[in-house]
Length: 159
Image (tube, rainbow, N blue to C red; front, side, top):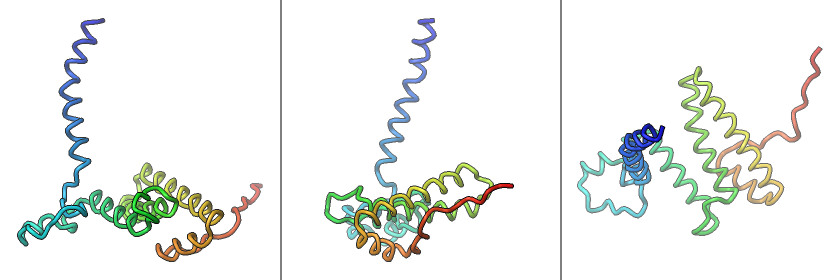
């Protein structure tokens, strides 16, 4: 029993190291132009075109849009989790998920995640409306979202 545990640990060590390297690479942007601190003025034009956002993966493009929207909705420099920022980031994620769900209608797991994110955004907007109606109106207008319907839906009785 002990030998089996030691053998399993020895086998999983390289796998754990590879996963740690992948995690570390995932934290650094593959497309350096996505990083606002990166100075692209010293790069040649062909290199800039290769690293442009149009060539990024869907995940990288969504991350870049999420960062840009969060920067636009920040109330101060350290703000990364206020309600307005959360709603804005969820809206960007929902736009990407809506395209995926439309392209892959049988992907039930993504459809469920899409519905959960819609519900979360609805709850955050309700909270924002209770706490700060001015921010609520400004957020809806800036994101181009329609005003949600008032009240809860009533279920019809089944016969």
